[in-house]
Length: 365
Image 1: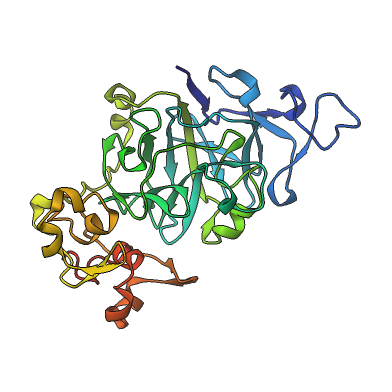
Image 2 (image 1 turned 30 degrees about the horizontal axis):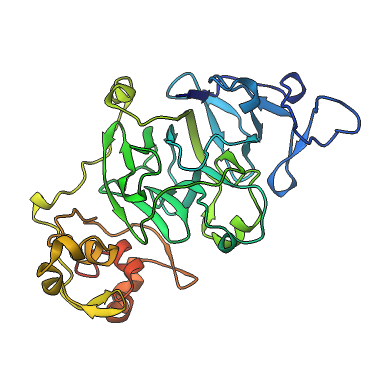
């Protein structure tokens, strides 16, 4: 079991002082150890951030345009559109092996879908040509969300204020090897959150030829920009990123909770009597059904995402009882819940719209 405190943003060093074996740097014809490397969009880096974990300097990060300022623990990196932070070595995600990540963030951008952590294939022309997962943790309109594929999405619910200009801690943990996405735990400020699976569930098996990055798509294949045009580079502070090849436990959060200055609001539970089943028909495995029909055999039917999303009370689930405050993508265009309200009858037939606008669509109140 490896536990990596990959970086704590305590200082950058010249790239040539930290050799990465096998790195194809820009001056490879001039030097054995490179002093510069082109990162995504051709932005040139000449600095490295030292990895403090068990893999050593092979997992140093190459960085550019990330000034260091006072953070939650020592110094923090200030990210912007021109910032780049990526790890040239492949891994550390690998197949179905247990992987957990955690980091501190501080941002005010509540109406963006910003990349926090990304691990994706280096090569390829389309995600549709592989059955292996990538791993992307984003802040989606202030909500922590994990993508393993275009239709494999796990969202933290009840925590919509993580882009409030305060420091917040986000952690994502696999409980077992090759677990289902629905079994993954998302923690905010040291507290385990209620999660919502938006699309399909599946056992996790990440690509074994990927690279890790922070705040953007890093060294991964160019097609990620095409399939996720709504995802943007992170803007804000980031500190103390960690990777563990084990599940996280309560001991991992002992030192986190005392540092939280403005805790995120508690998630909305069914006991609050705010969650409601969707009152109209919805598509269940291609057929229009109702929550009353689901209730007749709820233990079997609630296994499917459509039932849990539309019938949270029947399925003994919790639901996100707030509308997404910012914009989200729907049929290739950006929209919001205010626009949804104008065309409620048609738009609320979409699972994606209902997941972002549960109040507007009548799922909860």
